[in-house]
Length: 68
Image (tube, rainbow, N blue to C red; front, side, top):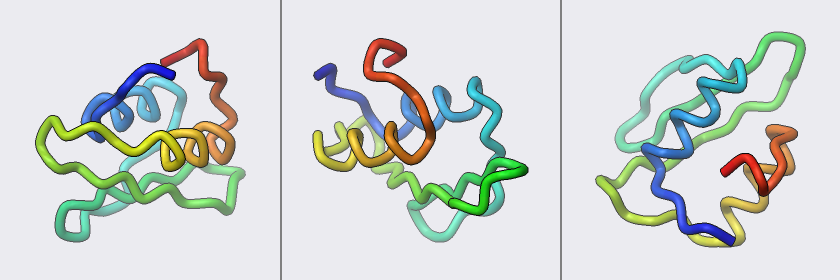
């Protein structure tokens, strides 16, 4: 699995139609109309997200690993 930072993952979500709802500290909260799930992406500079967190976000957002 490719290593991805929070900033990069946030850009990917925005390309896939997710919208930034609000920012709470260093976490950006995204939502998508028609989907009741929210995704809270930690943005800590260019620090890579943990593999388990990336897999969870991909599953919830309906994005495949190949699109990273």
